[in-house]
Image (cartoon, rainbow, N blue to C red; front, side, top):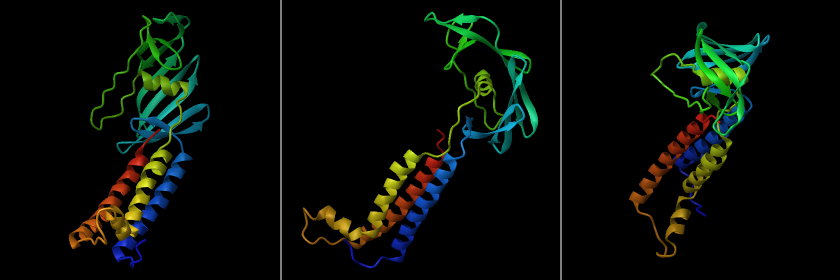
Length: 239
C-alpha cells in the first residue's frame, strides 16, 4: 500500500466520491418509494379525486394532468395543460368481437378524442387490433416543445389503469456508478501502489515521472466528473 500522506486534491476527490455515493443512493431510494406513470419521458404522479384517477406532472415546464373517471359504460379521459382542457376523450366497449390473424377473438373498443373517432377495433392486454384483425401499430410524432400529443394508445392506457414506473435505477447505481466510484477511490487513495502493481513484472523499483504524476491528477478529476455524470444519468432512467 502507499503510505505517503494524502494531498489536498486526493482528500477532496475522496470526499466528493463518498458524498456522491451517499447523496445519489438516498435520491434513488426516495424515487423508488415515489412511483408514477411514464408519459413523454417524465413521470405523472397518481392521486384520487372522488371516483376519478388523476395523474399529474410537468412537461416542458407546464403542468400536465390526465383525469380518468367512469362515465356510463365507458371511461372519460381528459388531458389538461396548465389548467386548460386540451383534449376530452372517451373509451367505450361496444358489443361483439374482432378476430385476429391467429383466429383469436378479442372484445371491441372504440376510442374518441374531442368527438372524433380515433380508433375502432379490439383490444387485449398487449395490443390494439384494427377492424380487419391486424395489429394496430403506433405512430409517434414529436414536434419541439408543443403541447403533448394524446393518441389512442395513451387514451386507452390511462383509461385501463396504467402501470407504475420509477425514476432512478438501483442496478445502474449499484453495479455501475458504485463500481466506478470504488475504482476511482482506489486510484486516488493509492496511486503509487497501483503504479508499482502495473510495472512490477517488467521493471525493478519503478518510479513515475513528473508528467505521469501530473496526468494522474488530471485523471482523478476527470474520473470523478465522469462518475458524477453517470449518477445523474442513472437518476434519469425511468423503468
